[in-house]
Every structure is written in C-alpha cells, then in structure tokens.
Length: 256
Figure 1: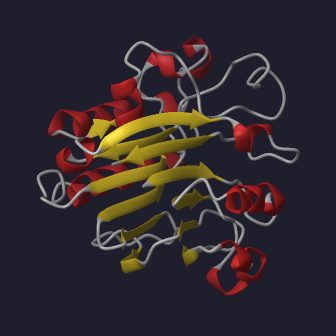
Figure 2: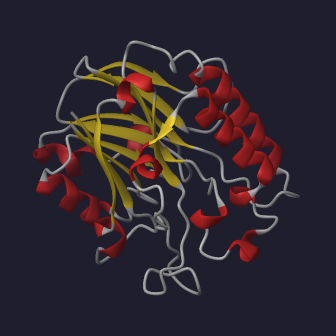
C-alpha cells in the first residue's frame, strides 16, 4: 500500500495538479489537508473518473481534510473525539479493513505571543491524549499530515529566522518529541537519520525551492505494528513543482 500525504493549500485553486496525481494512479491512498472548502461545496465531480473513494471533512475558506482511497474507507470519524473544535482538522478511518489512518492538519499557531498559540498547544495536548490508545494497538495505525511543527533545528533551513515562530517553538517540539518517546515512529526520519530535507517551500522571498530553503512540516508517524510494515518513506517534490503548485511537497509512505 502506497500512501501520500499532501497539504493542497486549496483543492479548488490547485485542482489540476491534484487531478494529475490521481490520473497517474501511483498512490493507493491520499491524505489531503487544507481543502478550504466546506463539505457541501466539495468538487467531487472533478475527481469522479480516477477510481478513488473519497471522504471529506471540510470547512469554508479554511482548514479541511480528506481521504482518497482505491480501497474501501470504513469507520470514519470527523473531528477529534473528546475535543470540541470549530475547525476541520482531523479525519480518521480504516482503509480496506487493514490499516487505520489519522489525517491531520494541525494548528499553525502563528507566533508564540499570538492568541493562536495557546490553541495550538491545547490541540496538541488533546491529540496526545487521543492517540495514546493506539500506540500499543495490535492494529497498524498511521498518522499523517501537515503537523505545522519542525521538530528539530535541522528541519528548518535557517533556525535563527524562526525564533519566536510557533512551528519551531520549544513547547510544540516538546509535545511532539513526547509522541516519539511514547513509541510513535517518525517514518521519514527513521529511514533518513542523517538527511536534511524539507516538505514546505514558500512561493516567494527566501523560502523557495530553488534556494533549498524550506521546512519539514509534514510527517508520517507509525505505531509499533505499522512501523514494522514500513518499506519506504520519501519526499515527493512533484506537487511543489507543478505548473500551479501548492506550497508543500508530498510525503509518500510504502507499507508492505
């Protein structure tokens, strides 16, 4: 099973580049974030011809997550159980009765002195509580998406530029490191222990693809059972290099 996670930064604005991914058919499952469209307005008709089942948890103008799968999508949960959130950031489901996936678009938080930052930390703490049930589960569980956290300085092209920025805040990093300490496996880092690479590049200014100045914000975390199934995890530059691209690369995970 080959899974892609991708922040599309508006499914309507970047529909053609996303259709190109579907048409190629390389991925069995695609976890999409930042749809920026509510459920009732989701453009299903654009994607009908490519053999994917689709489940959506949308929101007008902001946020939104979806799962595309060549296999069945079952046991769908929209919104993090136990946490009241007005934002569409979480969708969980079981793919083909074989793998449970949790697709997340975690809060950005802006800066550490922003009123958005406490919400980011609150959300992350709630997520910590929720996923604790799955770390020792006999079921393979994969968490994927845009985490909006660069967990180490080497995941930021110039750390000095991000002091006081929420994505590199020590408090957010500490929460995510707690997940790894609990036993969740960062699939890409596990296979690339010494590499420096990024999944997000801005459209202009310093943080651009050509300058190799970006951030690693997109992850797959695997519980113990899923980690044993991992065969590859690679950054897919294709979505970021499309004619009308999103600002994120894809991240691809291969499970046996």
